[in-house]
Image (cartoon, rainbow, N blue to C red; front, side):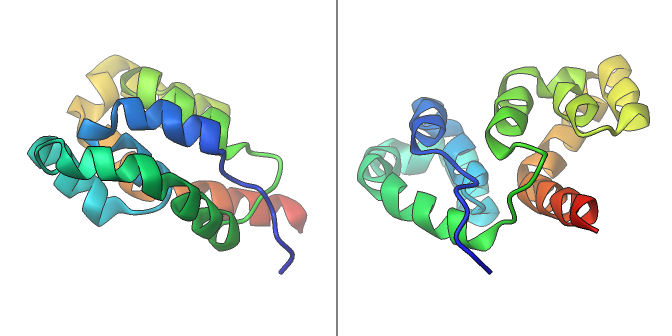
Length: 133
């Protein structure tokens, strides 16, 4: 598979600002450490500061791991991070029913938003592969 620039360092650094919540780690496909950052405020802000220097490597690995296509990773992650409880990212991906459910339930009581933090990269990759057929 050819190299594709699926993730952006700029978006990674934007999400790093909210890194004490693990947003940048989820974005780069690291849900376990993203969850750890979320519950410990970025390893008590020490891990958050260290990540400032680790983002370029996380970006390269994410670009190799995930499938690019018509659904844009960066836009989808921005929508999830800032409007996830309203289902904006799901609306963008064409998942109308769950978007409406998220809108009416605050991201399915935030559990759905956490689920999407864990799985959004794979959801986008699968969607991009389906469109290639």
